[in-house]
Image 1 (cartoon, rainbow, N blue to C red):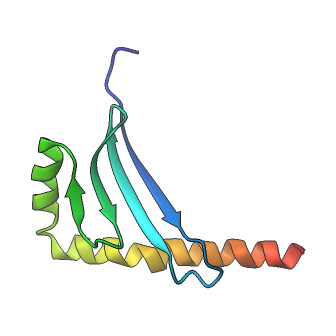
Image 2: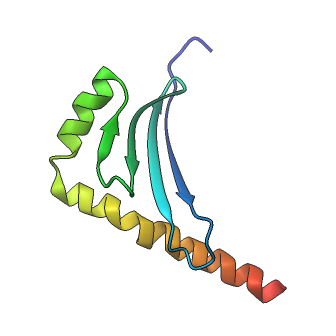
Image 3: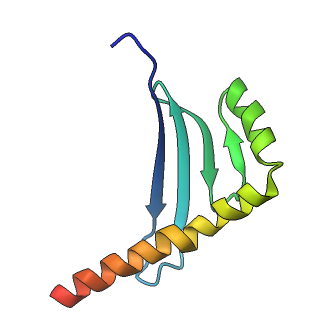
Length: 92
């Protein structure tokens, strides 16, 4: 109860049936505060604290990692959304 809490949350957000507005978001959270966020619309890491800004600057220099993160919208989000939509559509 008196310790520190660190977590990473990933979200896929869309409202259209064709997923054309799909957005992938990954939040790095420390003690309930977002420290760094990757948003596929922005395409880079953004820091929200002093340490987050410092680390985001370092992470944004790794072009291989940025390429992988940018691909998550298609590889992770759209892939899973298509599978869920077809599973729901098959039952209706």
